[in-house]
Length: 206
Image (cartoon, rainbow, N blue to C red; front, side, top):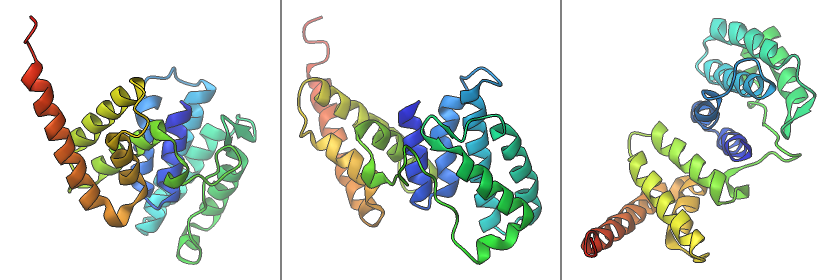
């Protein structure tokens, strides 16, 4: 769960407010209803929706979701799973009383384990989640390429190749929005080459 939390927080703090919820939703869907973990993720998902709707000037959507998200987070400690829940509740209260505040100040940042995490702070695991959901959000990138690149990166890490080019490409994709197109292109080329090598030996010893 920690990797999903950090990935979503980092993507949110990088300004990908709509994409952030995908990092949590994948995990949240499998949780038992009304557990603390389920309520935390449900509240965070709705919090990002509040910010998204506020940026779209959908004031009615902001008010309803702010109230609903607050209800999900109401019974949790001020800090839970490393998330500063108290700060999220305070931000939701401000949105509820003044939805248009988004036009006068930037969206509040999220804090995990005491830090406003960004993609630069992520290790490989949450970076791979962040890269995939960023690709999902964009129409320019094939998320399957990111998933396959991450799978090859994990294979390399498991075999002791800490300097794997796949690890570098996946992490750079999450961290470097200005260079994302060229990083994706190079990753796609390396994935195709690795796929080709794998197909060359497939079945040789069957």
